Image 1 (tube, rainbow, N blue to C red):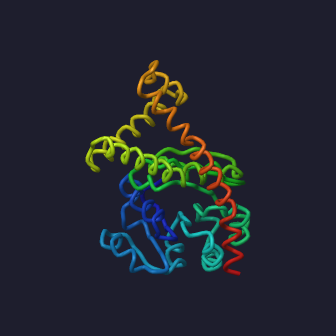
Image 2 (cartoon, rainbow, N blue to C red):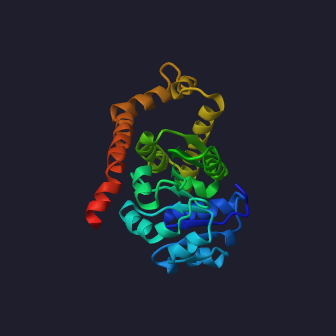
Image 3 (cartoon, one colour):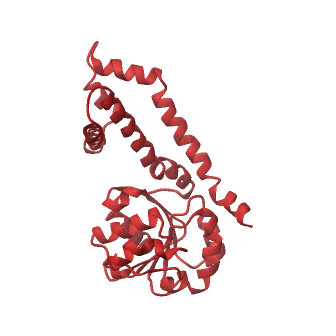
Length: 276
């Protein structure tokens, strides 16, 4: 993506703000070329102080941009799209939506069939260039897909998937970062109980988690392959693993992901029922 292209981020909440910060940190854009909007622009004062254009006027932001990123809540989507649909230009704009549960078809109902639309599901790791972002496109050009992928490749890893996989991707990647953070917190609490100070325990747990993830990515192995390397007969690791499994560790994580996926599948439609 050309660094000179202006980007409008509609919805400057946690995710929208992280994307704005990530784009600048990655060198994709200057702060002055990333406009961030939200209904209460006073909450964007910190971004504004760093040179990001901010405000509440979505139409103005879209008209000045080449790429439009939708980062609003599902229940806000219809109102936002109604407000900007007539200024979205198929010849100029690329629309990228991070709205959970809102299909390309739902977006096209507002924006028309000619506008290039891509769905993206990043996570808040995007602020430090460590997001896992899933992308799905339907009937858009290779060039538009390439532009979206180049943007998110600079902010972490990307995977192009089928649109029907976007809800599961929401649970595993977007929600998943919270699940792994909770696992790190639990490990640090165990560390405190066995004698470390809180700051030491969190650092030890987080660095260990990072090492585990990087082992899998570097070696391309299954987790159990790496686990086998640290479990010895009658050793402390296998005793600890078996105790966690007896307490439901794996089944709890699996059920959490499944439950999050089921909820994500309902978000847009339930939001529409609430607001209409």
